[in-house]
Length: 147
Ligand code: MN
Image 1: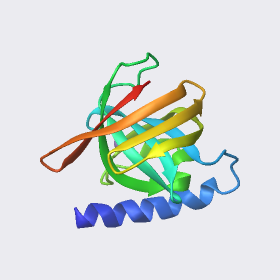
Image 2: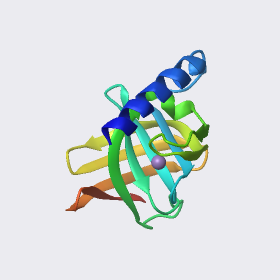
Image 3: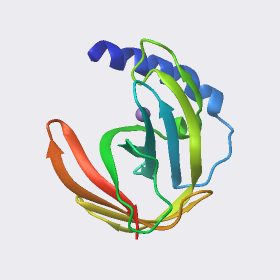
Image 4: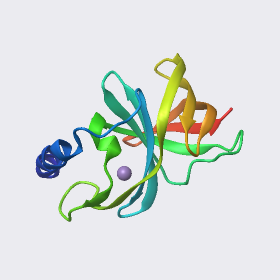
């Protein structure tokens, strides 16, 4: 794990400089479609200068009340949100990464167990909720849905 983290940091150091100068709205909202060991969607919201991230095994829903499991994972550097391409073999999360949606958001509520945001993306629009439901093993599980 420590070795993967080291490789991963080098990778981010290499890609981040290439992203400088790209335009984006802040705070940054985005979803990556990540075809790694398993296809999943990474929801990312800019809080405190980093992208807080949740991995969703199923595609985010545009329909009110349709809940998706969202596993809270390590925050990512802000500019990583604008990147798409292939994470080389041997790096954490190796596989292809595409931008599935991007935009900005307003925070309506934020506590340790609940986050409510108004998302202004190209696909996701309107009020979305993240609610912490449980820890299962090492997983920090939340639900993500439109409200
Ligand atoms: Mn991922």
